[in-house]
Image (cartoon, rainbow, N blue to C red; front, side, top):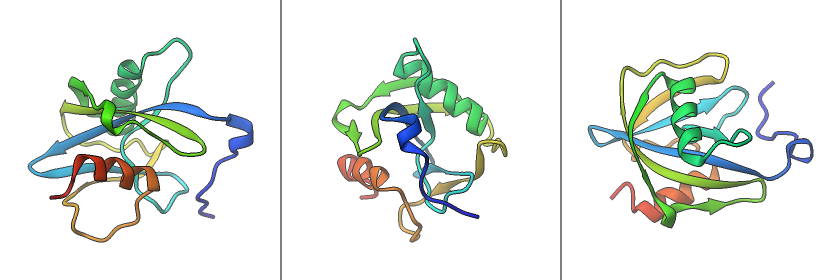
Length: 132
């Protein structure tokens, strides 16, 4: 059964590291298991981990892509009632490989095809003025 919620009372507010990964004019989106909506790669910070460390770790765990460089995008930092998102432009190398334990899918998106995105993704993309 698909759900679009987590047990937030159990997990509480979290700091999350989020990656903006682009190739050939396309944006990388992921779909976590049990969710209809697409999101940006990333995840929660582990105890003692910096947002930079978290975004690189999460990107590689979820997609097999290795971060070559990270550029913080403080203007894109956003929050919802559950999370604060630390956003990074990430230059990544390697072939896209979906971890089926974490994700049900991943795709390169042109920004024009109509797909369902989480609200925070809309907020971040608006601040990036993407797609143009």
